[in-house]
Image (cartoon, rainbow, N blue to C red):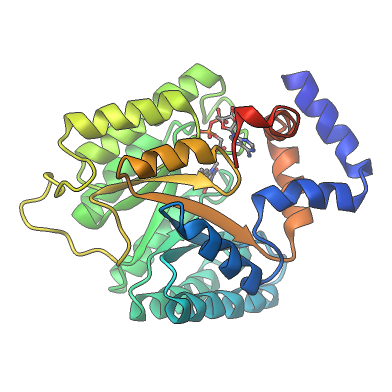
Length: 325
Ligand code: FAD
């Protein structure tokens, strides 16, 4: 797997752009907001709701953040005007988090306030370890400013995650709202688990900690051992489709579109069959839907960061029955 992944990643930059575009088509909704809306209208019939991501990350100058802010404002207007069941996901480094935190907070605040005015939730995606603490701090800063329609992503693979769950829950109580995933960035062994089984175990423990702390928990994995663990954990805590969240005496007010204390999330184009099964069984399922012009840079960077993805993608193309759209 390691060799195959690395080989694909080595040769990929020599592949014609249209070939990469053909592969990317499965995983992104297109280059424009109109295409994203069209895709969501199509997929709504599968019982899914959405989190919209404008492709792009790590800017080099603060001026580069403006197009992202404008685009996210347009996304919020479109969600409202179209009535599509969606919220938004943001990569904080696209808003300058690694250049100047204060400016990045102002940028994030602009988007989150506009979303709050329209009862739309905002998720800060989690990037590599350079941004972990700063991303958590940005979300906390918004809560301290009285804007609470925001939550972060925590990565099961990171050693620090249990600590982050408990410290954020201490500060935010039932308003804590996490997406939990394995983590796409291959972090060094000093700070993260590096083998598959340890990552799965740690991700499952993170799910349990979130559920036990009363947080809203968005489970973002396509991996069956993680999904099955989550289903058992939900059931043993009395959480499930159509049930009121038993962890709180009085209902916690959350943005529209939220599930009963939890939801499942999938990337666009990945393991749609499992997503549709969960949805048919009454679980809230959300599709992470990226769109934008930067699909080539985004895809290449992801592949360089984690060659394992190249193997998933190749397997999907060669053996489509293993991974339905
Ligand atoms: P894996 O064992 O990697 O995958 C299980 C199976 O799913 C594979 O065998 C394959 O069949 C399929 N699969 C998984 N990924 C792909 C793919 N890209 N293409 C084709 N098939 C695939 N990571 C972060 O670091 N920060 C984030 O903010 C973040 N947000 C996410 C949001 C969502 C909604 C999801 C679903 C994932 C997110 N991730 C994020 C990525 C995540 O951390 C994992 O890298 C990714 O989901 C793969 O892990 P897995 O749990 O699906 O398990």
